[in-house]
Image 1 (tube, rainbow, N blue to C red):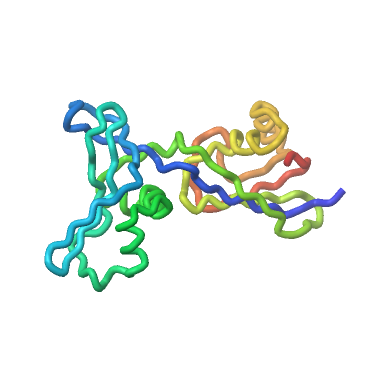
Image 2: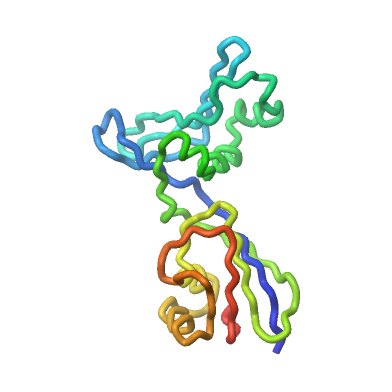
Length: 190
């Protein structure tokens, strides 16, 4: 039986909702990325915000992306993407934890649907190895991810972890944020 080193790269399909007190609702609500930017120039200085909407009442919130920056210091190609409300750029910004942190924003990382890009890196000598790359540091339950991408139930995956048929250095049953993990399999599951 052939053994392989396989790489899964996790790609979020949506922006995380952010949790913020809504001025109109008067309580903490989910705000959704509109994929639109607000741009304001003051002389030769530029401000750019990503606009969010309250899920309940549609009140807007402007997430600061660029503040008081010389227009000449902004890459013209990226500036054009801001002006054209580039949805890929909007999602990338909504996933940027440093931008969220600088705006004192809490994001809901647990409800984001994820696409798994799979590729075989090479063959392996004695066991299957899975490398999971999580470039956006999404909170992921490993048992759920493995179950969703194999023919096995979550209970069976958990049993395989407990019997050491699957070996990983993080808790498979908790939402965990990571950049990259390596999982070793004594049995082929994917």
